[in-house]
Length: 429
Image (cartoon, rainbow, N blue to C red):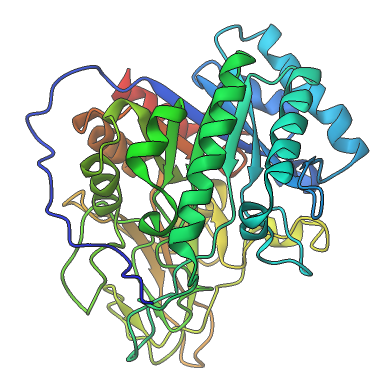
């Protein structure tokens, strides 16, 4: 059996839309930021300037226990204390809803890499264990709801001069779609009875046609956060660099038509998801490739003959790698801002997307010895405003920020804290 990545979908017009203005500010906060050191370590108090804007704080991440499939605190006693500390924030910010997210790429079980599929295939007792244990934990720690960021298999990346990625990564995808729908229906009913919120996070490069029955899912959840970024990354696509989160399809260089924001949004809307339930997710970080002497000097994407992730910035030297690793090639907004500064020791040259369709990037060609080259794709505060304009024009429910700890929460760049989040608010109002 073969599954196509996506059916062909026509584009919907972005202009001329009217109706309810976007109003959700979904802010993700990864507890892993607590385990960094130096200027990248984020404490609870750092959150406060953002929480005046955020309508929802999605705190991650919890997991599921192999075998019993109960909700799992990934950090044991730390989570027991931290959960209460985080939900206590709402005492100061009464408008804020705090959700606990499950999965999110953090629930790593090397012995059971397909644990989330195994959970779907398990018996009804396993499903009941998850639902009951989730409600107990949410109530005990005073969370307002649960976010499902299940780690389903990702579509294969596009290969350079090879197949285009439409491989079958899950032969039982149709079965798993039905099972996930049944879980969400039962979980949604149980959470509503407990006066708790349920949201769904669609992780990057998880094929929506494989796992999400849109027409049956959207009535069961309060909102859906579409992580529409990291379509291309230096880990998935080490030999060529390109825009990581373009809004629209740029029909050049054999690009795949579904690797853009507009296609992903259209899929959910055309399959019946109400616009006001869909939040557009964007990253507050950039992705950097190492350019080689064969990558050329113009650096107009697609940039060929790159050599995987570029050496990282502040994050690379501040992490307890064995406990909470970040992705190589990932650069926070303060990292990017510093590298764009003229007084930087090795500055990058920014190329601004004047069309406002694809994204900004910055470059530093490799030297004569083939070293120190970098190609960096990012949105930043300016393009965050562009994406907020797109979301508002499509009458979407709002924006989802992945995540607060990668924004400039200290105000290191210009003195303004959380500039990406603020840029979104400036557009949405």
